[in-house]
Image 1: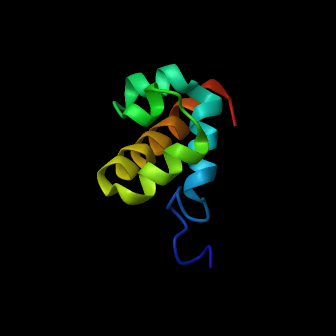
Image 2: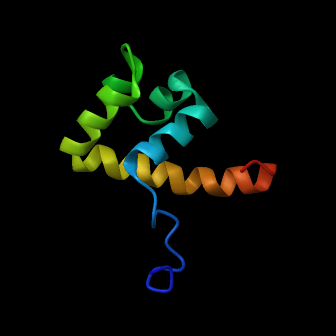
Length: 80
C-alpha cells in the first residue's frame, strides 16, 4: 500500500495521531495561535477537537497543512 502514495506524509496517519503530534510539538496555546479555532483556545482537549475537526472540512485541512509544515520544521531541528 505504501507504493500507492509514497510521497504523501499524511498516508497512514489518523486525525488523532496528527492532532496529538501537533499538540506535543506546539502545545495548545501555540496551536490556537497558529490555527484560530475556538476548540484549541477554550478548554482544549483531543476529544473535543477531533469532534469539531471531523465535522468541519476547512478546519481539518488547516490542521493537516500545519502538520505537513511541521514535519519540515521538525526535520530541520532534528526532532522526530
